[in-house]
Amino acid sequence: MSSQALAAVEPKMARAVDVMVRDLQAVRTGRASTALVERLMVEYYGTPTPLNQLAGISVPEAHSIVIQPWDRAALGAIEKAIQKSDLGLTPNVDGSVVRLNIPPLTEERRRDLVKQVHRRMEEARVEIRNLRREAAEEIKREERDGEISADEGRRELELLQKLTDRFTDEVDRHGKAKEQEVLAV
Image 1 (spheres, rainbow, N blue to C red):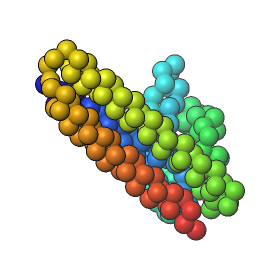
Image 2: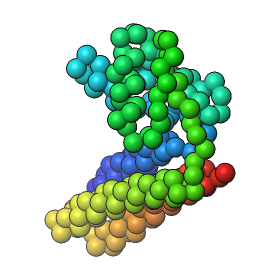
Image 3: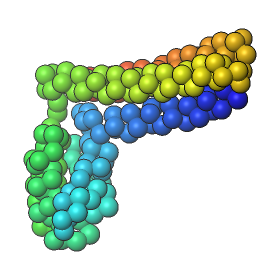
């Protein structure tokens, strides 16, 4: 029965890693990427809307992003959302498109971004450990209620720890890769 606890916690841990990876894609590196602005929320007719639902986003060069809204009335809202964001980029409205020039990162900005990456990695690790704690409590409860034996409970807890270690290693692997990407000049 407690294998149900393990089966339920594994997709949750995988989802925690996936969310972290998606968040890390939005961390700026030296190159332009549509992931920097895709999930940026734009106040569009009073409703917060992700930018990728309002406009086509492309990367014509390594150091620029072009945002072409499907509704020209959204240009001002897109510009305002980019200015309010923590991207540190200045939008240039050019007729019916918004251009973002991605300047090279300074050493200080790279260190700040690495700290952001580490903070996000730690949040993912904490989430995974919380999921482990909840599953372990469920296994111990089943053991207390007599649904599983003590040996079976111990085996399930060992499997749970291995699962936790696997996902924590995955978080570290993705985080280190992003760190190297940010630090690459």
